[in-house]
Length: 153
Image 1: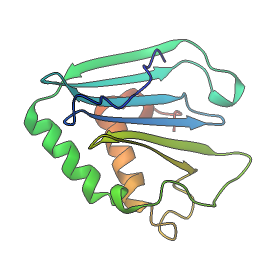
Image 2: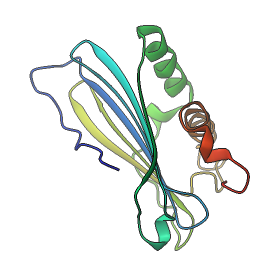
Image 3: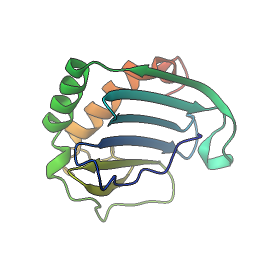
Image 4: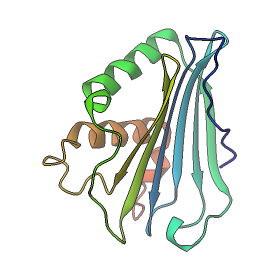
């Protein structure tokens, strides 16, 4: 995916990074969306690979990058907060052999965190993931609408 390693910037407490990975065992290509606020710019990069994750990763099929406005960023942060993401534990005990993986990596206030869920849409209400699943879907639709083409998801 040609994604950089996200690291805390010790000299920049205002640095913010958010990266969402969705990896499925079959039927949909792996995707990543990264939003980074640094050096006075806010960048959103979206990537989709060409192969099914469960059968070996492939080449970059699609990538898009754009600069966000401060208003775009504020709207993104409001949606993320509304999803309940910040109040959830980083991991839960739910797992399986097949399905999808949702990995959200953040750097906020100088702290690096990695959030992981196996197939977050499975029992989402009981697992308190409905807001995160809705947020994830909206973020993908806004940045990688091709992901939702017929037969893709």
